[in-house]
Length: 194
Image (cartoon, rainbow, N blue to C red; front, side):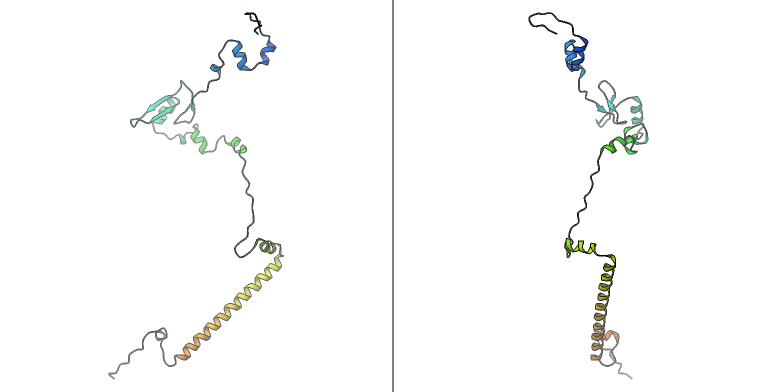
């Protein structure tokens, strides 16, 4: 500690040093703290996917001026042999493909639950839908059967009406008329030579 008015230094006690932050301790000891807390610019190996720290790795430049960062000779050799990193189980690519080491990440991710909201459908309001849901199954089955019987009856009436119209048309076209003539074909010309 520096005492005011004097250019002398009093030695620090261990207790005082323990209470200081790392940055303050390094400053007191005469070291530059920025040396110990540098942000390294790391690269990523183009083959293995590992981090390459400054002073490590190789840069391979192809004829088409593309550069590739490789962490070591092993990666360089495999890269030049054109072996796929996804086939080698120690590469990051393989581990990602086969979902290795992602158990911690999966537990961190929270799945967002979908909230089901019931909406009205065209031709039926939400209240009507809820009322139908609240009905007993026996009642719904009997209503469905009644609706089916009603539609069958309507179909039957329409068919009978159609048959009646068809019979009226046939009665109006008396005589020997072929099927084609009833559809609008001209009359067959009779031979007159006999």
